[in-house]
Image (cartoon, rainbow, N blue to C red; front, side, top):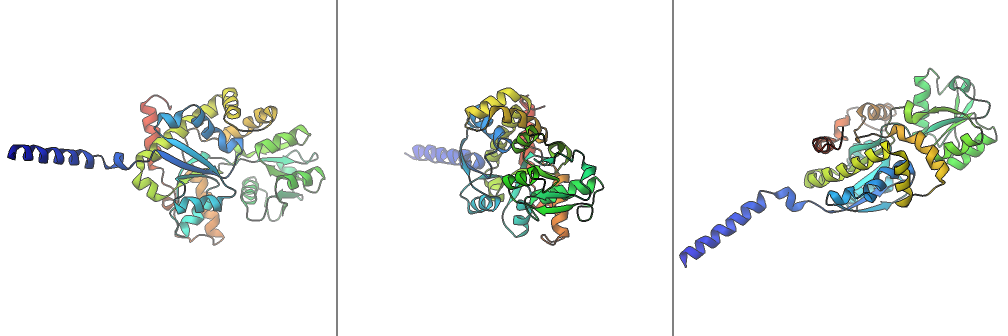
Length: 333
């Protein structure tokens, strides 16, 4: 009887030691909710490929994608704990949220360049010709306003003196203003740019190749990184594999995009891919230098305290682990 009790006690102790020796495994999540703010091909393609080709399933994950309108809504859903990861446009929302005390962390970049193509009127073909002219942007203080100002400055054009930046509105309004000759140029996403190019409007510059300022990043809560590091790593591995395929297999990637539910005119998508794909971050690495530019501007305008530093909002430690594992597996060069 005594020996049976001893054996039973030893069994319990052994079981407990095994259980507590793998705390991370015991608490990892398998079912994840991911929120998106855009259904554009540029924002969705790597994720759709990862899902369609079974990369998430391979990592032992089940993913529920959710679409919402606007970064603030996505961040609110993330902070509330209703979703696990969010894909948002631009790092400024994450920076400002973190500066206000919200538990937001940038963990990777989908694109480390600005997903805009600057299209000119039919009389304006070169950047230098914009001097003394009006350039349309979405609105004052918007991402398009910020990036166009930055690009002009880098090319020795003062956005406050040499050109007139005018808040025009959304895509349809900007395109109409361009066609009516009310503005000399305006930024457009790749798909909208293709339609204008086909109407004879010239491309002044593709910012997907010319302006290293991240427009799309993945964010999550610090709690997610602390409690579910392995889940986060597996999620990032799957997205990296989707990105690798999206960036290096154009025709097959587009085919999968349509099969996975993305919509659009095949001709327009084929051409727009050539505009947006150069900006993709091949392994999701975060462009710290590009995000620093955003932070510096927010500090300059007083939106963020001057003592705020990037290491408070960017946490790419687990991303680097995911990249290294894929390299060890021979799936990432």
